[in-house]
Image 1 (cartoon, rainbow, N blue to C red):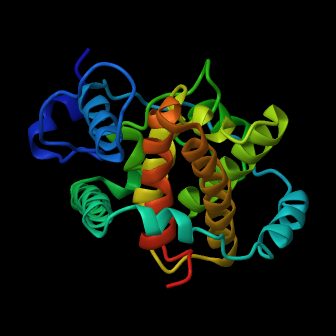
Image 2: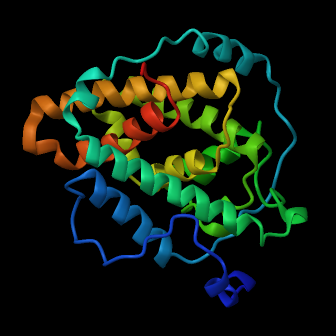
Length: 254
C-alpha cells in the first residue's frame, strides 16, 4: 500500500540521496563507492514506520559510563590523514554536507507534530538496539524514520550505538570487528544517518562518543593497512567515518 511519503516522493529530498549510477555489485573498493552504495540503497528502499515507545529508563548507569567517556582523549589519526589526499577528503566532506542540507530541507516540509511519534524514547536502549543495531530486527534508516529524529534522540541513539559497537568489538577480540559490524545489516547506514542529523555544537557526551568511535575506527583502519588488499572494503567503510568524525566534527587535532 502506498503511503503519503510515496505519493509525495518527488517533492521530498531523501535523507541519503545520491544522484548517480547504480553501484557495482560486490563490496565497495573505496570510500566513494561505499557512499554510493549507502545512498543507492537508501533511494531504493521502502519507507517503514517504527512502532511503540516505552517509559524512560533510569539514567544512573548511563551517567557512570558517560563520565568515563568524557575522559577519552583525542584519538591519534595522523597516519590516516597523512595518507588520504586533500581532494578525497574534500569530496567526502562535501558529500556529507550535501546530505545534511537535503535532510534539513526535507524537514521544512515535515509535520513537526509527528516528530518522534513512532520512535523509541531516547533512554529506551533495548528498542533503539532492535531498530538500528540487531541483525535480525534492524530496519534501514528511511526518510520516514530519519526525519523524526530530533537532536535529543540523535544524541541518545549515538550514545547507545557507540556502546553497542564498543562492546561487540571487545567481545570479538578482533581489531577489524567494528568494520565487519558496520558492514553487516544496516548498522553503517544508521551511523551515517545519525551523524547527518546531528546539529553542532553538541554536548560533551556526544563528542566523547564520537572520539570513542574514532579511536575504534582508527585502530581498525591501521589493521586494514597491514592486511593490504584483503581488507579494501573494510578500509573504505572506515575511511568515510574517520573523515566525518575526525574532520567534519573536529574530533582530531588541527
